[in-house]
Length: 335
Image (cartoon, rainbow, N blue to C red):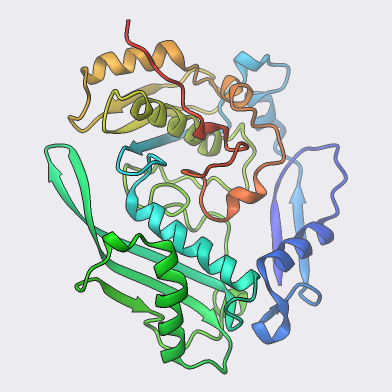
């Protein structure tokens, strides 16, 4: 069973059956033998209109510049120069593994793979002050759903040979690297049959894999007036711009809001001591180059586009996709 619920006010006529069943099919649950079938599951729809009180507070009869935040909260962005994506290496490698698993399943390279899967990578770093340098991959964890007729030895062998070797650079792996490949043993029962799913449960892998900080709000299932989503995208834009401009080797950027209020309540920069100029000076550059009012974020990042479906898999950050406008840094210049 799939239950979709929430609040939205729109003039669009949505075919929920087509959208949801098409999504389940794309994910790969296309046979009851996998525990879930897009043709046969039961869909319940409980979508209502948005509260008029929220609408009046946020956007009704307001200009772009005056649109208020859709909720209160703290949002964070992070960037680091340890990878070309300006993302933590641990996150980049975990992302590459899950993308490679998806490729191997969808092109039938590994016919025993099923859709449900998780990856995790532990990297050993050297820390000098605030600067961090990745040295080696310490541990790789892959848990993937599989057909019942494949044995664990085959799973572990093919994950190492066909997935890990093509996703993880060889110079990062050594004889001491630890592998936990389907450590629970059998993983035939997966997806909704094995575990209830809920939008927003995976906020850490959606962001920076535990690096930086997180305000607790999920991105998915929210329109861009919800600063849980749009301000986190803007915060990544700011952080990436700082590192891309060579102003710091890594940085945490924070912004906070109140519902209905356009101007941020606070903004904060922490370069972990890696800044080439004081953090206070970087903060002033941010103020000059970025307008963090919600309506302006939506306008500048062009967030009123149908781009959000693909943010639901492989993460929201560090991806080379022109639709991910927050990944296109501004080059900030000192006076």
